[in-house]
Image (cartoon, rainbow, N blue to C red; front, side, top):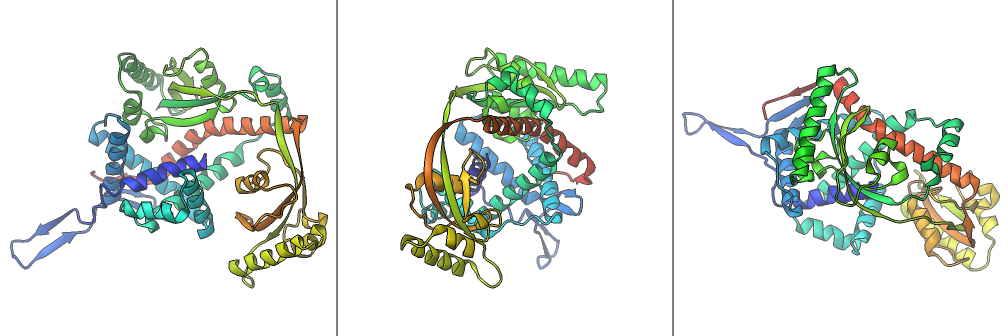
Length: 441
């Protein structure tokens, strides 16, 4: 999930305090005492029209070492890690430039929402959360930039990979009739992965070499070697620097090759070699949890949306929503006020009515508000990516999954499955197409 990725970003940012950025890598002293030339930084890599600085590489590498030590994972050879960190920075630079060129911009309010969610997940207020970050030696501006970069890359990945994924009705029907389709409410799986990539143009000898490398890694694991350390040193997946951790995933969202490989494994066990279009994989099952849910709670809701603009800024927008909320609490008709004020064209003419909710149909903050307010209560103004809302839930019910909900859920799972398979291929593709010149590191 986004939040989980951002939490990792926060951990990284916190640990930067231990290894502050290297602003000066050295000084060249001339024979004359008066002549001094300071080297501010060096270029580690040229990436298209951008660069990766040596100081960035050193700082990221140092922060990852701190994380590895904190987690009890044995650190790999420094030069091996440094090369992998540089590849990660190169990939990030390519994606950030793609996002910039495509006009992707992250609003300050979106970063504020993310910080608020991270703070809440740690039972802290946003103010206390930021105070802890600063106390750790990380400027708030750095944390905000890290979050913005993560969000930009996520949008670029979603837009580039998900946009090309199409699920036909026949694929949907086949899935619903399959064993995986019948296990729609399958357990969650905590998974680790080591990937030895194989390009589509690889020769037979290159394929054999990749298989041999993975077999060697598998042998080391069977002899007691640490899976995470081997992932950091060897895996070509973007999760390598997190020890190969993929986190919690729905079993039905995993590629069928992975699902088959995990059958019969107990927590802590590692799969046999798995071959996919991306290369050869080893999977480690850390844990399973969850089970089938037959009923879901649905909410019948309506809302009023106001979006800040050049004439009415954010403060004025929230003031107007408070005034509308006061009118509603005084007995004025929600339908009338929604038709008059709401800037959601999809619901305004229906008096703000959104109908019965289905899981995942609304953004998380909207669903959280629906679930938390009392029946017929008018929520306080809250912000989503679309603007500022007030919301009312007029009815609730426990409902069996309808055929429509089931098909929507299956469609989403198939898209996520294809997305997982295509993301690594796409990352390799943009890396191959970019101009990259690696300097001596």
